[in-house]
Each structure stands twice: as C-alpha cells, then as structure tokens.
Length: 320
Length: 320
Image 1 (spheres, one colour):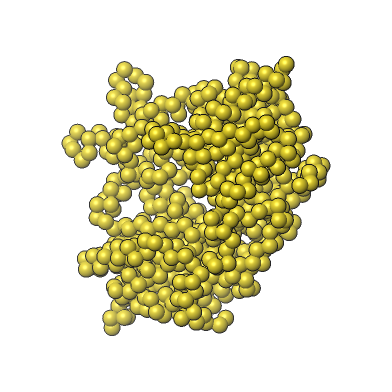
Image 2: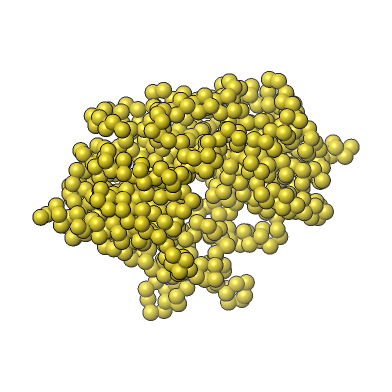
C-alpha cells in the first residue's frame, strides 16, 4: 500500500470538501478546552463517533451513509470520563450520546406520567416513571456532575466534509498539549465520495434510467494527522470488517502505513462482545464472558481500560 | 412514460427485495385495526414517513439513504387524529414520531431535574423542567388520550425492502374497508436499488479503488397499489424536487400515469411553508403567511384539512 502524499491531502480537503463555516470557532473552543484541562493535570481524548453522510447532490436529497449507531463512541466517552479524561465528543448529529444513550430505544412519552396519576392530589408535575427508566436518578446525577465539571465538549457533524475539516481542526487544537492528547477514531467514515465540483446541483432524476455512480476514494486523513497535525499524540484507529479472515491483516497493514499507536479491530456481528487491540508489538483480545454480559458489563469499559494504560506508558516514554 | 406492468412488480418484489419475517403478522394487525375503526364509523389513513435505507452489501456496512426527518408524516398524523381518523403510521425507524417529535432537538437529560433541586426536601423524584419543555403537560395528556383510544398504530421499517413489502401488506389489509381508507404516501422512497441476488455479501473494500455503483430503478409500487391492491382507496402521493420549474409537470404526469387521486407537490427549500395539492381537475396552493408562522401554524394542518374534505367528497361519490 503506497503511502499517501501529505501535501496532496491538504489541497484536496480545501478543494473537494466544502469547509463548514464554523470551523475556526470550533477549533478555538477545542483548543481552550484542551488547555484548560491539561493545565488541571488531565489527559484529553478526542472521540469520533457515528457514520458520515456523503451527499450525491449539492442540494442534497440522496446520500451514502455508513452503518453506525454511535454506541461505541458514546459508551466509551463515559468510561474515559470515569478514568479522569476530559472528552471532546465529535459525533454524528443524532447518533447515540453519552448518558442519554439509554433513552434511545424508548419513546420518552411512555416514560413520563403525571405525578399522582389522575388522582385529586395531581400536582400537574410531569415525572419520570421509575418502572420504565429504573436508572434515571443515577444517570441524571452523573450527567449533571459531568456538565458542572465541564468534562465533555460535544461537537456535531453530519457530512463527510464536516467530519474531515473538524477532525483536522481538532488535531491542530490538541497538538498544543502534546502526548497528553489521545485520538480515539471510532467514527465509521466513508471510504468513497463525490468531489464538490463534480456533484450535480439538483436531485438526480429517476426518469433518466438506472443510476451509474462513480465515487472517488476518500483521502486517508490518518496520515497527516499522525505526521503533521498532532505528531506527539497517542492515536487509535478502528477497523470494522464483516469478514473476520482479513481483519487482523488489515489492522497490521494500517499500523505499518500510518505509524500510529493502536488499531481496535472488530467484526460487525461480534463487535459488542469481542475486539482485538493491535499495536506494533502486541495483540490483546478483549472478550466479554457470559457472566460479564449477565452483569451488563460493556466491552468499551475493557477497551478504555486497555488504552488508558497504554497511553500512560506512552506519556512516560515521551518524557524519558 | 410507459405504464409499468403490474405482474412484473409482484415478481420483482418477491425475487429482488428480501421479505421481512414479520410481514404476515403485521398485515393481520393492520387489518384488525382497520376493521375495528371502520366499524366504529372512522376513516383510516395509512401514513408513510421518513427515508428508506438501500443496502449496498448484504452484511450491511454501507447504504444509500434519502434526506427525510419524517417531520411531515409525524405532524400530519396528529392532524389526522384531530380530524377523527385512525392512523397507521408506517415510518422509518428513529424518524420523527407524533407527539414526541417536540423532544428531538433537545437532550432529554437537559429537560429533567430532581424535584426540589438539591434541597433537603428532595423527594428523589425526577421531574420535567417546564422551562425547557413548556408544553409537556399538554402533549403528554394528548398522547395518553390517543394511546387509550388506540387511534395510532405504529409500524417501523428501515430498508427499502421492508418498506415495499409492508406497504403492500398495508394496502391489502386496508382494501377491506374500501373508500374509507386513505393512503398518504409521504415517505422519501429511494428510486434506485441493488437487487438482493446481485449484492456483495461483504463490506466493499476500498483497496479495490474507486467505487463504481450500478443501481436499478425501484419498481413503481403506486401502480399495483392503485389498480390491484386497494383499488377503492383514496390515494395521495408526494413529489419533492429541488428544481421548482419541473415540479408541477412531474406531479401532473404522475397523476396521468398512476390514476390516483392527488399529488402533494413541494420544493425542498420551501417545503415547510408552501405546497401545491394537485388533483386531475384542481390545483390548490397552500401557503403559510408570516402571521401563520408567528402563530406556529404548521402547513400539515392545511394539507390535512384539504385532503380530508376531498376524501369525504370521494366517499360520497363512490356511494352515489
């Protein structure tokens, strides 16, 4: 696999991917967040989460998307915060979100009721039904603590263009805190796109017959991220495949090509109970047992625990 | 535009679109719902809402999607219920939903608080903050009434295949109540797909180079729906374009081709304040004034009011 030329990626980003208007403002916000927490002695992790939207038309009716609920990113954010990290959560609009993720499978109105029911003592207050959401008090308490201590900075993207530009901005913002920064790139990023100048303006007409789409390959942004934008940071990428037989080989090749610190490798069907953390020297299988599943242990707790230790070693080595 | 052959569509549906395992069960549920409400003297509307997911791989990592929040369908469902209809809400998983749609822009945990705050009188109850959700009591009351009277039957789809098979099942289920059934086809359905037998099993590898996609045209299901599955029903389709200059022509052509009762035509940028209801004989512009917008009037109230009158006339004509 040939190594992508870095200079060409910066040019491509500017020409072929629409720049979000708020990118500079977000970059300053992220830089301030990182400095504040680094000065307080905290490490900072940038988590990317959810799928990217790739428009087929500039006034977009149709788009290509990636399967991703954002569960891994949202859940990991909570464990990183529990481990003392401050978290920048760069996530797809409406994907799963830390703490609120528990609500997403239910209709909120089914979880609310009038206090005292229809009885005369009805206060008019609308309360949460604890039978529907038994953990609500615990979750709300934790959410409020995290909000108060400003440990979570949420940033949203929808399209691939927004994702790429915001990730670059994040990398530049976090470069100031050196090896204290971790990148945890869990988002499901499209491999293909249509360059902005080649996109049709209007909705593609079905009366023109079958659709022939030709999509270019998305530049591998990991390369400039590791080599240019945040060269001192601890960088983790993710590899999701449906075919287990090619997974570890692909993970190793990614490490060879991009020279970052670790790949979390997983297979679509088993991703919630089994991952392999691959580094240049090691390969750690993380597995949930039946007992774990019964106790509602999440695999992200194990992943985060593995990576925060590795990050600590990495920081020590940089200093030494 | 040549009229699609109906028999070929039934065959295509069976061969090229995976049949959801629960389709017969859902069909019976819809038929029972329709009979129950028709016997109680109610009309029944089937609303389709949200975009369809078109997988590119059978173990799906990537898919084509359509822009649609489901706002029009969810909002219309409420107005149909207010107008005395029973509603089957065939919607994309996680698209906007009647009554709960007001929550979707906020993080629910930001709308909850401990009763009495952190004060000693704290009951441990988690209550809704009325400053964040001022209408919550009204909405919850209405939601509970609708639930109790069983006026809303929600059915979910994600993929195009699920949508097509469930819509066919709905049409057959509703055919039993004749002209009392309305179809309000507001979903944003893909025009293109990859037939199940031609789909690759595994994730498409980006190492193979740029993506060349060849997608077939989705069969026009409106044709068998109108002519075979529910020939007595009152059927409305929707037309969304980004180019206003071709919109009305496309709406008229759809009426000519499919011989249904009305097309609601709208342009992407102005769809929340302007639509045209096109029938073979008439063309009604529905517009929200600035005053309407200030009073939070929704265009769906006008659309539903226009169509329920037309449906009444239609029923009278069938009986006469």
